[in-house]
Amino acid sequence: MSLLRLLPLLGLVAWAGTALGQEVGLPRDGAAAAGSWDLSLDGSFRRCGLTLAAEAGPVGQAVRFPAGCRRALPLVNGVLGWRYEDGAIQFLDRDGRAVLDFAVPEASGTLSAEAPTGERYNLTLTSARSAPETPTLTPAALTAPPTPREAWAGIPASAAAVAGLYTLDRFVEKDVCRLVLGADSVQVQEGCRDPGLAIFDPAAWHYETGRLTLTARRGHSVALIPVGDGRWRRDPEIGTAFVLRRVTP
Image (tube, rainbow, N blue to C red):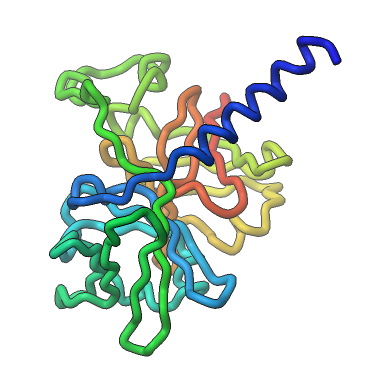
């Protein structure tokens, strides 16, 4: 076998060895707990990815999950926030009471908690939140009007820099649907051939500090973050690929 063919294989082996030899450390405080997690119902295939945010929410700190989680795990409909307290990650209801209490073990492993209904849920860390060495968005970037090119060099500075025509890309298929983010609404263009977007039926959008939120007519929403070159991906990145890509009219 030639050296050129061996290089990718050797890289894969090296990565696998690293992954097997290093376990993701469990958080020991609230700052370390913020990040992406996988929530699952024990003994079933029901699961969803969610984000424990660092910023404040309606109660405790904010928790975000895609609309599909509400169907897969109905318990999350009553979860409005989270906190780290007494060595445990707690999912909170609207009154600030713990719906799920995931005690963080001393050793690495999956966190587990029992719901009031008796069902047991597992929580697995998928990626820890790491603070950048320098701010990704500065006050100057928020006040200076960016050019179209500058707007996509990093995080867009305003909603005006985000508005425009976008195409939806899936995992394999590209340009399956086009939509316009207008001044105060979302307009799906004729010829859209993506059933998922048709069911979601976006009607409005909102942008704030690097986060684009599409809101459906029925009220549920999808959050996206910029990944460069005018592209936005769903956050958390779970399920079928959902990427909005800015295009020229």
